[in-house]
Figure 1 (cartoon, rainbow, N blue to C red):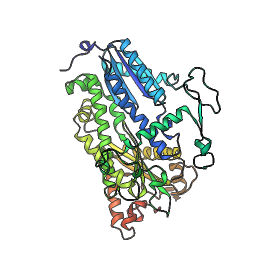
Figure 2: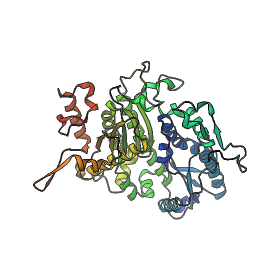
Figure 3: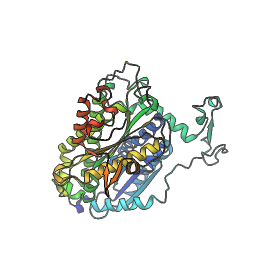
Figure 4: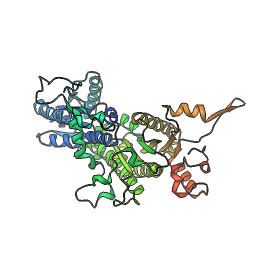
Length: 467
């Protein structure tokens, strides 16, 4: 049964371990395998922290998603020992920058969480958890950490233009590459096409370069699908963990763990269903590599690179499945009831889809995809409470110049007549509109089935025609 605040005084401290600059960690590389490897490192924090906490008696996890963990402890000594092990694993082994905060358990669990979040925000500007290993080019052997080389020099690769940039590597980069090679296939092992391989997905079937996701030699476009959960921010702002625990008849920290686990399962379940659907016709024995590369599946955020002809089906299936799973989750629906949002808010997923040439800088693709997600969310906020659903926006990047989607549309896809402003596009679309437009595109004689999803749904969908 649920216990009141005075009865759960067994816990005296609440700590948070949070990976910093997750976007930079992932996007600092320029090769697909390295980008996916960086994402995998962050996901591995869940497994590492769970194992370390389990070794210390009396400690429990109250929140556990990729890159963020909360740990409850009965005494500072046990907690300090655990946090030091976590820091060693995340900073020294995985080379991830982290922020660690500890606050005393005061009052209710909900009040303690708010204090912890305030503490984390203050510590972000005074970092103390970053790796201090030397990495400057041609740096002398470190006198503090003599067992670690400052850099590694590989003169044999200098003549290869593709590998030349990797001729001089820091110790951190070398270790990260090694971990990436060991864990790369783990990103794909949950998909249906790889269930029959007892040893995990064969590396020869996986996309290692951006070029592996190109549909044909006619162009070099690939799709970047970025998705973000709708309604979650509003829900978390109002959610009282103690009140949720009372409704679920459990402890507050167990309620928070159930909540974050439910969100994580809905997200991963939706992605798995969508990827399995769009790759149903892919043959592992063919010469083509797997056409989808999942990068980030964390909390309420999704980044996926895929072949351009699969992007719309992938996004729509993911949106539909997430909404379905969230509506069936007792924990999430109870949270909506506790906050008074049941009937006013619905947990959905909105997507931004960017089509860009495979050589276009990844960090710029990420910024533009993020802008598309914001535009999709703006459309969702305009919907009535009875019609809440995820929305989708997309952009086909014709020019290699770095541009903002909103500015480009304002300059090229609008015109004024008699003092009135007319838009030559209808996006963003709701999930229902997207399904309807895609079906119309497939059925249109102007849009052959093989290429229906590679068009911006064509003029038959009521939008401007873009390749």
